[in-house]
Image (cartoon, rainbow, N blue to C red):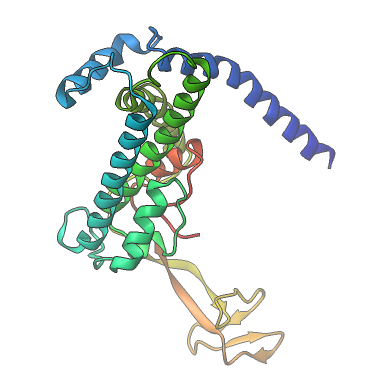
Length: 276
């Protein structure tokens, strides 16, 4: 009990210490101030504005800001939906998984775009890698960024009571993604890969077990079971277990997991690439 309290205390203490500099950094980003990453990312930011014809000085009313959020979210739903119902015909599908049914695809698209990230499927058996990283991982970034942008618009609404404009949704989204979420999660993804989390585009593999195991019909491992490798019979304390199943192979999923797990954790999202 004492060890758990110590761990929680240290964890909360670290969060508080990190919150102070991170909060200042985010404030400077959202106000358009020069930061430690501006030297490298400011040209990227300006390039995005130029390509998308975004006026960084434009101020939106609450109606314009809300309309931008709605249009952006609608496009996200449509993109994720189409990726799922057409994934069998697209690249990035080494498992050759079939298209997702329209109702499940719609449910998943709405769920991820709204940052709910509720899954009614098993990731490695339902969605292709392209759908995972181009659809769901992207939405893990932009749905979190949308929430942050709306929060800052709300804060500006309280501060600028007598002024026009809540900022620019497109500018806010650009800054949040390239200055905050991408740098943070690139670092987190490298740490995850270093810790053994997979990040590849290989098809799943089935490998033999070093030692076979016996399981019940519901998949529960029978601890202490004796397995006759020649006959396949399973006994426990000298009694035959006719319903037992001997497992000699294991299915090992692959895929771009680290990149999605990183933003899943930092963006308070759900929806992992693998079922658990």
